[in-house]
Length: 279
Ligand SMILES: Cc1ncc(COP(=O)(O)O)c(C=O)c1O
Image 1: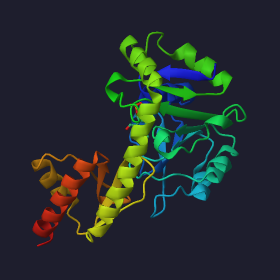
Image 2: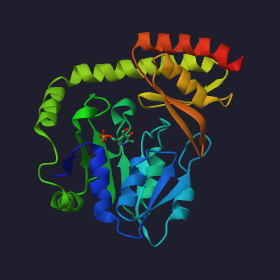
Image 3: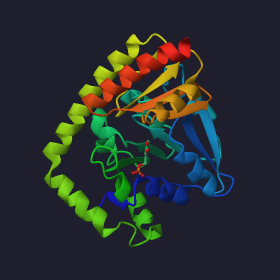
Image 4: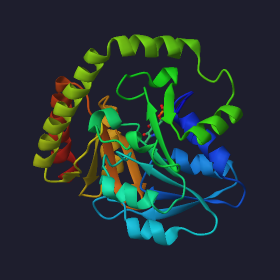
């Protein structure tokens, strides 16, 4: 009864915002973070109030509380955060929950971090937790996610949700994934181990600063200021990474964790490009 499924957790972000946010209302988000929250807020006619994270991408709880105003309808927290991979201390989430405002905790990468507030949903009327099969189960293209909501909110969401929002192929894929959960979680464990190896290798490259991550990617600052050039050169060699250039994410790239062989190829390519780009 607490669970509502959606066509990806993106659809649930959209539904939750449509439920709570109207024209002129405000949503608080701790940037840099997942971009969909801005899109969903603006689609409801709301305004996103952005609270800057600190230099290690930790949420500034005091600044979040200060940003709360009469028009605030939701506080959005991605945990682990995308694109930084940072995790929030549980105490910080509880402090934000204690404001009494609806809090949407997006745990899209939960299976990689194993940190969750989902068990608290039955205790907090203002806590909503989102999960997805896109990352750990690899079903991104089939569009299937779910949220864990207080009963009253779940009931309202079911009233505004399209009745056939989740396609039958996704449902079959979820059932099969759940039968194979041991295998899938062993893949998550392997990705986590590979992430730590990739982190160690990236750290050896003095012109990159990787940030510790609890998700299936690593964010890196490119210290020589040539992130866009690096992204392009990697792309030319068939290696796709995401490039960012926005507040707190100047000259950054996000690398998804792959197999051991992918790490080896990436690191070798970065070593070669380092010599070329840094001269
Ligand atoms: C934090 C976060 N939430 C939600 C999503 C969307 O996931 P889904 O494929 O379930 O819509 C993503 C995907 O990148 C994400 O990073």
